[in-house]
Length: 86
Image (cartoon, rainbow, N blue to C red; front, side, top):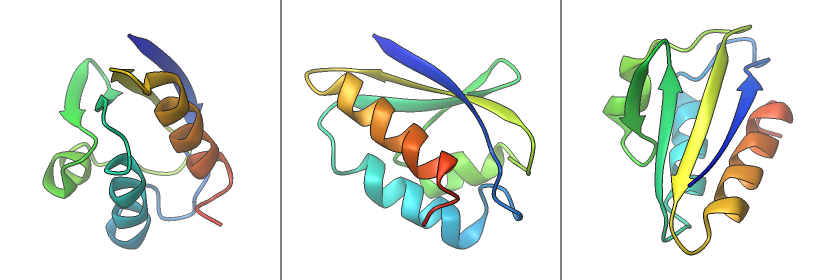
C-alpha cells in the first residue's frame, strides 16, 4: 500500500470536469485506488464516489493505492492535482 497527501488548489475543487480527468487517470492503473477525506474512503475510479466527498479548494486529501503499479498511480494522481489539472 502506498499513499500520499495533497492539497487541492484547483478553484472549483474536485468537481465535474476535474473529477472526470482524475477518474480517467486513475483508470489507467491496475492498482486499487482510493481517495480519503475526513476518514471517508471512496473508490478513485468512481465519479459518484469522488463527487460524494465534496472536495473543495484548499482541502487536504489522501490518495491511496494498492497493487503492482501503486507508486506510479499515486505519484501521477498527486501530480495531476498539484498541477491544477493542466
